[in-house]
Length: 625
Image 1 (tube, one colour):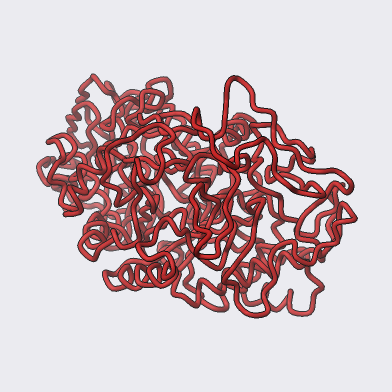
Image 2 (cartoon, rainbow, N blue to C red):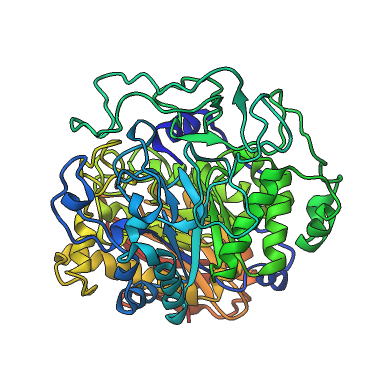
């Protein structure tokens, strides 16, 4: 999603609720059936990963600032990512989107800077779903083959491949030059004389021409440098509705003006022009959902996107991340995802959904595997990291989502969010350590990190379009801390500072523990509130909980305070002592992160006590021996 609009939506969504106690899971066996293992997703912005050019000129061209290629993901690079503790790699920005480069000799139409964001373009303005970004290929004519080779290399080292599908909108100049025989482009058969038709791919303003937004506050496409096609004009007759839903023939400059909204069979007044799922169908499996849609009259856009997904599955892609999925009707997702699961039941399906009241519909009716846990957990942890939030709020979030906890993917960075080390977020990558421990160990859900997060990237580059604090997704740029790890494509961290090496070691230890731990696929119980009430020197900057299954018992405790060291007797309430069937008076516990801290769990009068000494920003994952 685009940061300018993302901020507006985030401000509109507030509130969580506290419901029943999170310990009320039916049985340990049932829980393990839900989560056989933890996954870790490594999101990488594909064109930035292997770029070793350090020029970083604002609005720089591809020649000036450089660009990474598919081939930069060597087997060595991929093994290093895997060994970080990664199971899935999300290659962001792979489908061919609008860019400001001349590839006409390859049959690719030029893109107009008046409807492109940045020089390198938004990865969410896709212009050809059946091909890949030519910027990413060494041999442009063989770009699809180069990506196929990357898929194969990724699988060879033991990771799965995820790419983007952007269902809500496409680039204004969408045109596929390598689509399979019989496939028609979006809009190719549309009746443009009407605003809406069920099988139109777009919405139109008949008899009105599209007008480029009015640029304000000194803004100009591509900065100070003029481009031959930059003339505040883009031919589009009639005008199409804009990707974020604006119906204006001249959208605002803060709208997603580079894209057009896809029509899924929703009338302009919001009425649905397709069948709805029967009451109770959210409890049916994907096979029943697939069967439901077999004989239904469905809109053309549904079919087009299903065929795109199946095309990439055939090429070996293992899953998809769906941009702004909540802007597309949940019935479409029932159709789309059940079709995908019929082809590959293990496909990894991750969606960007920000409205908490929609979570359960998109998981149960829409058959999503995972949703971003942004508005609740991420936002709450971010406030704690920034020093003005309380850890007291974190157990309430986990409790509120306990019925769908396995489906709520956790992250602290992605391409839309500020870098942890940026001054507008936490100002220090070290402040991400306790947050990462909590994020990665508190539920059975997958964990996601963004490339460069593990070495403390701060997103301070002025790339051109957009503002610093986020690594640019719109321009050609180098990513400095990440480049020090790349080390002239040796991928060995040879140029990293000692603090950067230490940070990466922390991530490697933590993520590998999460994918190997049995307890993290089992049960959870909060002990934070109990300790807030019964333990001295235990503050709202500390958080603790327990995780367990039949074979492993863990006590997790984290200190979010950047300055203060805390010493206290951490307590385990009597119900945990009973559930864990602890009968002796003393048990050894040892930290699983660094293997250095040891303590004794003493059980007296049915309550457990462990002497804890936590340095600033330190966490322990204590395993009961």
